[in-house]
Figure 1 (cartoon, rainbow, N blue to C red):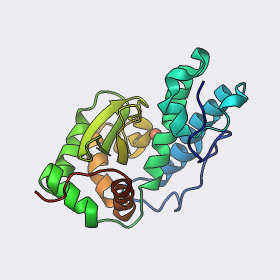
Figure 2: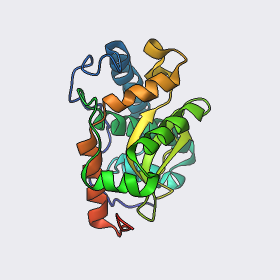
Figure 3: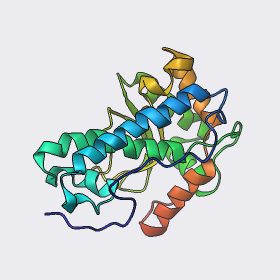
Length: 224
Ligand SMILES: [Fe+2]
């Protein structure tokens, strides 16, 4: 039996409004895609997750992170649904949180800039690796910038809504490789979509996520 260890948003999960208008990321991400993505796709994951959890009041006090981290302990009948729909909810939450209008030309600074230089060589090499991972990923999924258990940054992709909580990785930045995220504007050109992403990232927020993590866990030195 699992016990509650985190206090955050719990059942019934709900769709948070975005911090900006649906057309605010134009021309990088078009308004129609943003609206459908948020109101239809993300909402559907939340609706399906809540429906699966409804018959299990003993699970209603758990955060989405805790449910996913301990998915193997959930009733077998809802395990896959929580993994898929709950993963969809969590990943889209990360995604919206790290988007920001008018960020063209903005680069990471502070701790994040130092960590990127340490682990990828430069910001440009990091971007190249992130885009390559996204382009090469087969089918639907997500591409991540995450922190591994040693505190180092890494780039990788995962299929579907597979999350990295059980791998004890912390997600800093995430981009959606499902066709609903880009097909209206970019059709099959996933590389163009991934390259446009650099114009709409809230780097201050990403840096804060890393600094919060480094404040609580042992980290590798930022310079050799
Ligand atoms: Fe999506």
